[in-house]
Image (cartoon, helix red, strand yellow):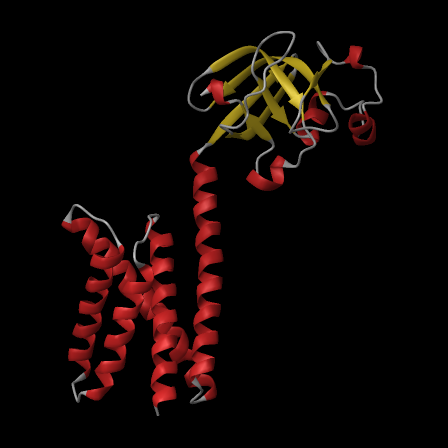
Length: 266
């Protein structure tokens, strides 16, 4: 009997810990004393079944416990913040409880070990989904409509503002925006992908074409840099004689955009 109680407490603490951590990820803030808070919640969860109380009293106790966990684990100055954190913890608690109930409805009663496994799976899947959504929102926040113009070529794309892009053209001293081969090919169809990667082409056929040494981005130790007549951004800014670098770093896979804007251009 003692072993079952200890195991039940351990699993409750683990689940509460994951609930607190997941809630912190949802509200984009740091949590404090997460283990202590989880322990308090676990002890209360063990005590509730000892009393014969109605379901709505149990709901009130759950809300109270969520409030206690909020007070212990989160820092807040306003009641609205306290309310937000408490609601998120309550939502996350029901997420874990709902997952366990759904599995129980399908397979019937199961062991405490299975409860722990279900909780871990819910935590991992939820964390991946939340981070994916947050990353998508972050990318969208720093995404701008871009129009590139050179001679008769007008290209419409979306560009991502990368604060880490601090590249400058060693010749023109201008900031360099980076583009993928797909965009480059719209300007210079006569240079195929293989030749562009191996730099096996006549750079004199590229407007102001030259190579700039670089350490972290691009193919090899240098990238092709050339000039286009104009770049217009969705925020109304216009730049003339823009330095453009051809990158094979794969940033488009990370950000989903084919243009990497320079930090000095926004």
